[in-house]
Image 1 (cartoon, rainbow, N blue to C red):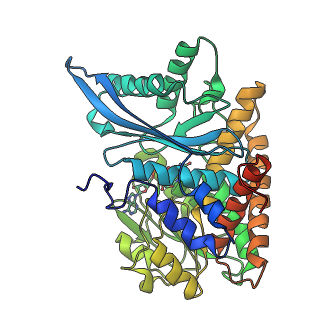
Image 2 (spheres, rainbow, N blue to C red; image 1 turned 30 degrees about the vertical axis):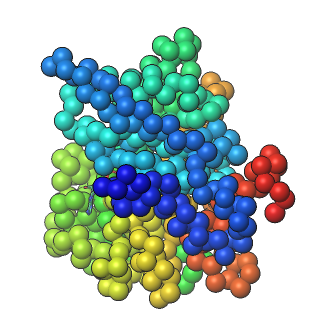
Image 3 (tube, rainbow, N blue to C red; image 1 turned 180 degrees about the vertical axis):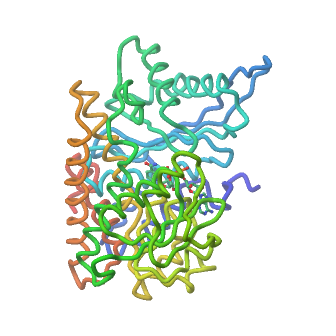
Length: 425
Ligand code: NAD
């Protein structure tokens, strides 16, 4: 591989960030000065972290923390454990976190972390030592008022608990707000598990009020039945939506008259299997092309692509996964009258409740689940309104993604202007 190129064949500057910014530069009226400020993260910190393995050997894990922007507040973003993690991926995710926090107007900037590791190959002890080593290595770079990590792919509440503990051992005092996504009982917030899905349901309700799609009981297909997809399916069913198809990595289920969601959800919670008596089994690719009112990719990135974009028959897409639609497919769908509600808005309920967790840790006052959910609903409704307003401005031709990016970038740049890092815009 060319030394200048990362694993995706792009330069190891945040080329994806540049591409995204260039896409919206015109609609968001960004100046060269704005672009220069936003094209690169503020800081990239790389480390090669040695960890003692169970057999006595030492393995060294390439590790990253990217701090994209802190104009609006302490930086915030998860830590991913995955063999394919690299600098460019972490850059891009940090950039998206900065925008996501801005779009829902929580007072955080954006960051992201990662370790190049296959966690399934580690014992519990090795996983704990790696988690602690990451914090020990980046201890000077993180903190409740500087940069607050969280879970991401392959890191969970237990990993956050080890990380909090390690940080507190290093600094010598209780610091629950150093990290979010902790288990309830160790400073975690009630309502975090379902937050992303509840936020998505709230956004979808508000979105459908602005467009002529779906009627009283909109039909929905949900790709991915993990934390986000399963709880979203349940929330949508409770709100009167007709969920006609769901899937996981093994395949999908389809029932045009509507799936029996409560039984499906309970069975999945008990056994991990997707089972519905009346439903037909379908491959994942077919779920994506079903004729439904709303298609919800809630699994992994790059699912709606050049390959299948022309086959999408849904009237709208709600992006619950991060980056499920490639830029080409996104432009194609918008041009063909299929609105795509973008990830930075649709799935921002999770980081919103992470912010609530940090507030609770900082004030030492803990909230009921009802209070968390009430505040989350209000925050998401306000964010949606703000994006809808930007979309309606000008000649009204901005896509939902362009409107969300414009609002987010405007908020970041306004904070930069107040700080005198750029001239008044
Ligand atoms: P998860 O690991 O709990 O679930 C992922 C689900 O996707 C599983 O059901 C898996 O079987 C399924 N899946 C994987 N590959 C698939 C494929 N090719 N086709 C169909 N299904 C497939 O993950 P999650 O926490 O539910 O996150 C899902 C997405 O939402 C990810 O993109 C994540 O980055 C994003 N997200 C999650 C949160 C959160 O709070 N958990 C917040 C924001 C964004």
